[in-house]
Amino acid sequence: MFIAQGIKIADICIQKKLNRNKNAIMKAIDLLNEFELQAAIFDLDGTLLDNNYYHRISWIAYLKNAGRNITEEEFNENMNGRTNHDAVQYIFGKDLSEEKITNITLEKEAVYREMYAQYIKPVPGLINLLEFFRNKGLLMAIATSGIQPNIDFMFDHVPIKPYFKAVINSAHITNGKPDPEIYLKTASTLNVQPEHCLVFEDAVVGIEAAKSAGMKVVAVATTEDKKELSNADLIIDDYRELMEN
Image (tube, rainbow, N blue to C red):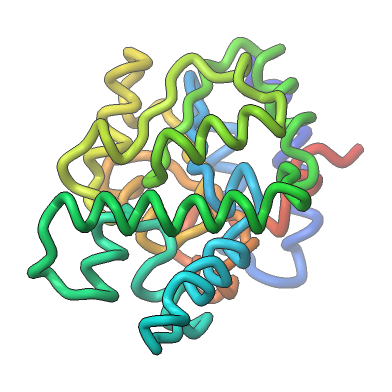
């Protein structure tokens, strides 16, 4: 049922990429016509919400008193897509106690939520895509390196919780992205084999995690330069590209 509709989406993608990358054309055909999709798994930061700018500036605000700054390049390379635990260790070193890492995480994320609350909104086209997938009978889940208060914050402001059968976050895993653990756990929770899962990601480490899990990946270019996302099967600016008539 989904594959037939997928032909229409693939044709759109083919036309858009015709003059850019013939390899991407074939990937779009393989992804949407030949892949037997049973589940769609979404990262959160930069994928459901276009919010990584606010994560970065909230880190800058939090670190101001410490005399530490985070550049965009540094954020993308070392922090985007990773757990708060890994990000805190990157900034402050690996000698911190778990209690201290948790405290820093909660303090910084509170700054993020305060800064982003008045601007929060989904990536363009997301709601239509979620509705489309639900109508086609796909299971959907979130697999995020983030923490539960940020997930609750999103659901409080963006009414998309009913679309998702499962939400897996950093508290449910031992190894953060680029390790595939979070995507394998999500697939297992949905009772779907990894090869039947399509992942939406914005981060290089997230793409690596999903590919290592044996899944197809659509990269959403909200944060990283498109050339950095080249390992994905398909690259889009936002979800409107998949839903245009």
